Length: 593
Image: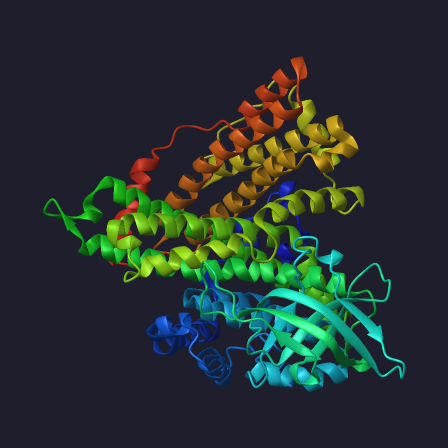
């Protein structure tokens, strides 16, 4: 993976990536596949046959499922062996999130425990804290939750009012405040709590044990979906936390929250992949079984369109997710080779690809919403019935666009992080943006046709990147410091960047499958081209909307000409490509890519 190690987070915007430098899910080794199968078997035997009981929050059921998952090692896949885990790499932990993603509320409980509940201690705790807490979290003996959100502090997490004051003896911090939407709150033994000490500007994090006292909570929240996950408001009333339970340094809590959320975002993306795969399987099987006008509905073009589009969008974001996961692993390996501490290297490697994490969170969650919506439609009237599998999937999907930072916030973060890295000199965006602007005044260089596999498609992606640089560069130049307030324009730019990343990822996966001789290479090529041609239209629309918002006169006309040039492509018959994909799905009676 040597080529991949040189790639920086966000650099895909200005740099071409060879297919040899990306990891694709078909490359997981047998051990990783066995771990995945263990998770899938657990869902089949322990979770999917108890969904109604889980949603009814049967007393003790979810904690018992967590215990059983812990016994199988599912809670400790990425935890170092010295703390009772398996010590697997980041991409393997992504595979576990993917496999468990079809577990509805159980997936939420497990994700909260293994991610935002455990990782702050693993990555920021001192040796004593890690030795005390992590082994019990790895086995599930102790369950964890994460207390950040407050009634008046949602996306603006650092404005929280929960306070911490040192007692007169200097032995304990007394925490007072209210937290809400706390996943696993009803049965957690450990709470990662964020509070401000005295008049501090920034949050500080604490490891709080339920047995410390001073903790009360409201009844379970009544939610639209994920009804089986415990979600409570939690109140801290002079909760006495030993001073040695401060996590990391004073006022470092906001940094902890941000970095852990980066991990949460990409892991959430992986979980939606597993959920979407399950929904597609149900939709295909129902389409094959449901007969209308003397034919299975899978014979009708409108249904085949839906199945193929569902599979294509899943295949695309799956490609991007595991590409980014390997980027994170490669960055970690390089940091370790450079002498960095393991915990710091884990955080730094994810932070390096925070842009990609945000993109994956947004595009995966919106992919799942599309898939479940079309799943309901394929089921027709039965899709609206609580007795059919789509109803729960439809309701449970909706939270993912709010979890781990809303999709709107994440879109804004994509552009904000890119521009900040450019200002720091970490990414050279200005040079390529100026080159693109200069290209508008030059005669197009059509060059010779390259008949290598995917050459034409990669040229289109290169031009789509130019479209993004053109619009972002013009917006920065025109709006300067006020750009940060123009959220609609920023989200237009984020859409272009996101579609570029997902499109490039699925093309690289298809190209790699072709070169390794995979029997699904032709289907992958069809899906890559379908996604590409859809992305062209979306990027063109987002680009025009942005340019109309700040451009004017001859300058606007010139940029519109440039946008048309950079979003131009030869015709491609997407209908026939979708028919080939749908036929494969229908013949296999499942998602088979």
